[in-house]
Image (cartoon, rainbow, N blue to C red; front, side, top):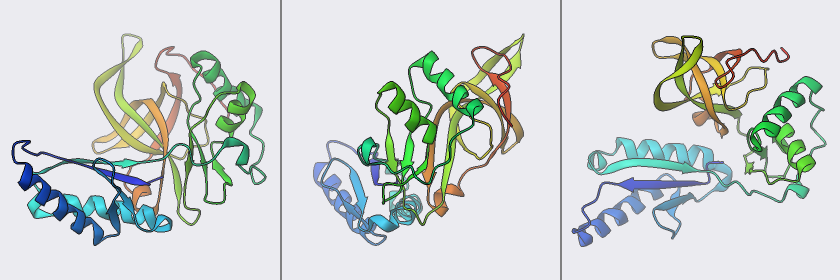
Amino acid sequence: MNETLSVYLNLDPERRIENEVLIRRIDKLLLTVGMKYSGVMNMYIPTDRQKRDQIVFQAEVLLRETDWLKDLLAYTLVGTLTNACPMEEILTDAMSNPSPEKLWYYEQYYQKTHELPHAVVVDENKQLRDGYISYLLAKKYHVPVEICEMVSAQPLRKIVKGMHVEFSDGKWRKKSDKRCIWIYSLREPVVPGDILMANTKTGADFICVHRIEYTAGREFCSKYAKIRQHMNTNMEEGESTHHEK
């Protein structure tokens, strides 16, 4: 995770020479925190892969706080490689067997959607760190799975991306299409479509999970608020799912 950083700028395409000068200036700026130009499009990579979590985070902060980029920086996008190693090379000896209830919950989601609930995460030694059930389902059904790599010395958190919802006229309805991110550290299994109670700036609120991912590194893991409760309800079905506590 955190292997690349893409930088998007508000540039005038007719000012080609000035744009080139600006981009070279950004190249030099990012080198001060350990990011170098990859040679591909607008993508930068850490000079030290073992410290990439801190480096990429610092690079994002630096770009946001640089005065001469205030009106030029559109946004940045942190990239994660999803083919860290072949699945047959993943080591699973440190993992314990999931409960039948948890396995059933995730497998039911796969059978319904033909999609795995989320990626699997390995460390630099190819030891599986999270996503064991996705790994088991990928093997059972012979389907590809996203494999992300983390630095073993850094913290890892599961995150959910979702939108705010409300219960009205017997159904869960979206309040808007805006999607936000929360840390998911509850014991209950979670899949896209689940309704959760989240901590927000204005207090507790309900969200519907759109996608499940991971984040790594102390700085990235401290960016987000936490999910408070799984509501045992699905957005589409609006019914209790009763999974294991």
